[in-house]
Length: 289
Length: 161
Ligand SMILES: Cc1cc2nc3c(=O)[nH]c(=O)nc-3n(C[C@H](O)[C@H](O)[C@H](O)COP(=O)(O)OP(=O)(O)OC[C@H]3O[C@@H](n4cnc5c(N)ncnc54)[C@H](O)[C@@H]3O)c2cc1C
Ligand code: FES
Ligand code: FES
Image 1 (cartoon, rainbow over the protein chains, first blue to last red):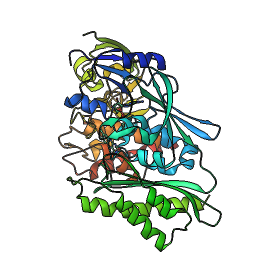
Image 2 (cartoon, rainbow over the protein chains, first blue to last red; image 1 turned 30 degrees about the vertical axis):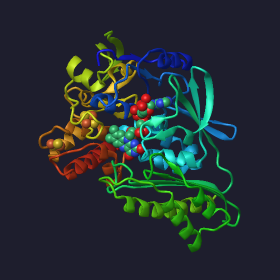
Image 3 (cartoon, rainbow over the protein chains, first blue to last red; image 1 turned 90 degrees about the horizontal axis):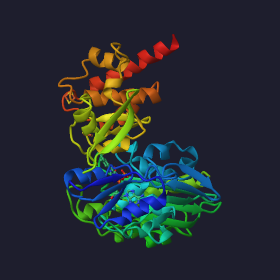
């Protein structure tokens, strides 16, 4: 890496200039828990690394009218320590908290998890299920996009040259709204999801679902929003028939691969089971509010 | 290639160094500053042998660039003892024989100290989860967990005095 440069700008505009400026690959650096592994192994050969953590607002969580604003580079430890956010969205925190060890949590961010664009990224399904959006800065100014618009394939994002995520906006839950994220791995810690599932539901006062989003991870090249699973939930309580419809819809949405962690058949089956379990948890949490 | 000039605090002392952009904090600690307590087991964030504390957060120094240390405060295993006075975690590692080859030990010591700074009375389960990012090929972990829980008890007793 004879030509690598490192900069740590303190404004968004400066960062955009550094990311857009050169001819070669320029990468934003948040926690580095993906980027540095790829740099060391030679899988990624950037010309410029732009550390975005010194830009004010890139680390931290603030509450604004009706939403939480999370700095793109906020590490996992800060997210799980934020009581109001954890209370609002236990599922998002559950997902983010599953990323790596305590050491990894000291650095790993939501933006890095999203932009590394792994289908198995643990924080992404619940963020999509909560209808979170991201603010993206680039050479043409700022734009907002839903989280599900970022990943377009394994290792590939829709971000243009010079663009990076500045912050995430997550709406505050409505009455009787909550979420859950579950992943299945063969061990209890430090592994990559065989399947992950985020479920976000809103109930009426009688426990009947009025709005839902079900999102699967690790069963297709990108996260999958399972429209049929949401349809199976809306208008219903979580009874046996609803559960069966949810399970079937989740299984139908899977286009997984076979690898050392699981076969196509296994992943598909587990997706149905996890969808049911995550829905049960989300319904219980929403009902308790 | 232009080297980056970095001013930082390591184990309470101001330190300045020059580093290449791709050098990790672990490379800098070991190769530039002679602080060889932090070990390189995997260079991929899996083993925890390189664990340091950066501005209060436990991190893998193999997954942090040296240049990122600018203006931060870093604690390495060399900063855990007070002079000749061992930290209770270190003392208990000796008493419980919680090490064999010792390669993983610096990472475990830093991680265990970070746990006890945050949680005075961790359960065995909390201790095991906290230390899940530290791998040991020799001990089978049990003696390590006993040593940490015993150190916690000693620190609580000292605090109560
Ligand atoms: C030991 C270990 C265990 C792990 N376990 C898990 C796990 O269980 N689940 C899981 O999902 N992941 C896991 N990971 C992967 C990784 O920790 C996560 O994906 C993490 O969230 C990445 O965040 P980061 O801030 O470290 O990203 P970085 O490494 O800084 O960045 C990752 C990618 O995103 C880009 N990027 C960073 N910030 C931005 C931004 N603001 N805008 C645009 N692009 C950006 C970078 O250029 C890079 O391409 C693990 C990694 C390790 C080393
Ligand atoms: S050397 Fe850093 S985690 Fe193994
Ligand atoms: S004592 Fe040898 S690796 Fe832990």
